[in-house]
Amino acid sequence: MKVRAVGETRTGRAVDLGTFDRLDDVSVPLVADSIRRREAESGGDGDDAVVVECPTPGPVHAHVGAIRAETDFSLRPALAAAARSQGHTAPQDDELAAIRDRLDSLDVSEVDLREARRRVAETSDAAEELRERVAAVRGRVRALREADADPGPAESDLADATRRLSEAETERIAAEQALSRARERARADRERRRERLRLEDRAANLRRRARERLADVVRDAFEDARAEIPEAENRRPPVESALAVARVADLAAPVAVAREVDPFGSADATSEWLDAPVIRV
Image 1 (cartoon, one colour):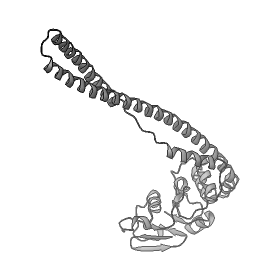
Image 2: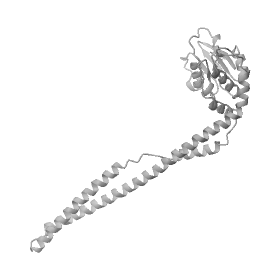
Image 3: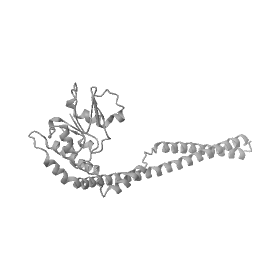
């Protein structure tokens, strides 16, 4: 890795920020953020207090990439990530992958039936009004014929009203069919939504079981590593656990370690014990 700060550069697997002149107020979270961003991705504009060029951090870094006095994390997911960094897999992985593929293929969208219902109501009302109009005009035509009067204008009105009624009925039927299709889509979406919830619940259970299985793979190595850490009166147990997780993991990107919790006294010694790159802050 390469670490640049205040115009100076350090390279190697172990870098102590205390060796930089005029570098003040640098925190472990700031360095961990620089490790996550990496100059290769961020462009290295030089405005950051610390710029780190290094390999891409893996999932383990989300748990123990920044080790300081306040460190706190969930142990089982961290151990599972450490096991995966070593290349271990879980029996649940194939089913989880299949579930992820199925979830990706499930297109669940909200179907709004209000517009379709409104359209049915409008076209039904329009058709009903025209049916009444046709009935009234037909009655007038009949009356004119019975009175031996000229029914021509009324018959023209009847033909026009009948044509408009036919068009309105066509629109009503189309609106009802559209509402029926929308209801079918809504039912299908409800089914997909129920399937999604079922799959998500299944995936959560599988992930939990996978974490348990993977954590057990490295549990003994983790306990052995934690037992090797020199004791310190004021060091919190999560700090020792974080160091032990980092040791059993296969890490290519550096870990940021606060000097006040470093049990080995130097960046070189900590890097050697962790068998990983270290930036001592």
